[in-house]
Every structure is written in C-alpha cells, then in structure tokens.
Amino acid sequence: MARADGIWPWSNHHAKSDANTANVTDDKTANPAPDGIRRLHLVFRGEVQGVGFRWTASRCATQTGCTGWVRNEPDWETVTMELQGTQEQISTFFATFTKAWSRYPIEYVIDEKNDIPPVKGDSQFKVRY
Image 1 (spheres, helix red, strand yellow):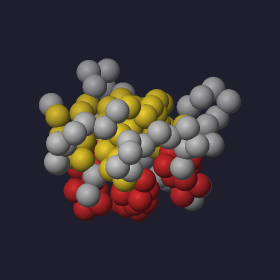
Image 2: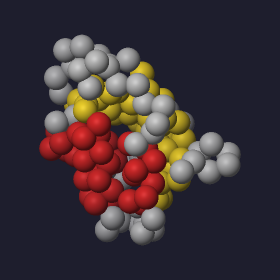
Image 3: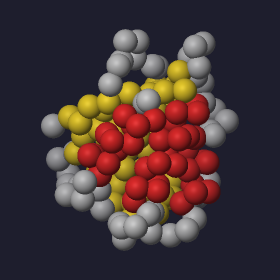
Image 4: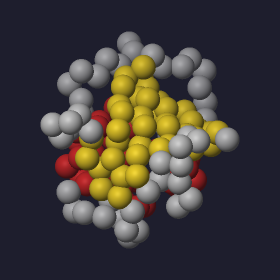
C-alpha cells in the first residue's frame, strides 16, 4: 500500500517487501491491453545507482519474459524503468527482483508508478545509458 504521501514503500532490507510487491503488481486501476499485456513506468528512488540495480533488473526481466528498459537518471538518486509483460510475468519479475536484493542492505522506494500503453513489437529488456 502506498504511504499517505503517495510514495510506494519498497525496502529489500526488511521482511515487508513481499507485501509491497503485491501492491505494485495487483493494482486495481491496472488497464492491461486486450491481449493481457501491461506496461508500467516506474521511478525508483534511494540506493539505486552504483549498486548493480540496472543489471539486476535486466537479468530478472529476461528470466521472467518481461521486456522494456531501465536507465540511471542524472540526479544520481533515481532509476527509471519501463516494464512490460503479462500480469503473471510482472508479478514474477517483482518476486525475483526482491529475492535478488534480499541479501543486500539497500533501501529504495518506488516513487512513481503509472500504467502506460504497451509497446507493440517490444522483444527484449535493455539497459539504457
């Protein structure tokens, strides 16, 4: 559940991260395309640059069949990601991503989360520079 200030809590250093994953992926306002494909625009804020965040996102997306992209922003505090897949693929991505970070003491929040139109023909997940 989003905090009162609208920020999505997401801490991989605390056991509560599994509950937060459900909030990201089971949003009742989600509007998937007719073929069941959904695309999320996400902005992560916190300890997200210089720690392998983009590489881990890319690896997890590829493992779960999601497409899209991820990039560092010039503010040194945020990473932007677009993630596309079925609801099941997106849920599996967040479970895999949470597990990958569970042994590292980094903390971050999902500062923005919006459903956007899926990109037809998107076939891979890329790290953008």
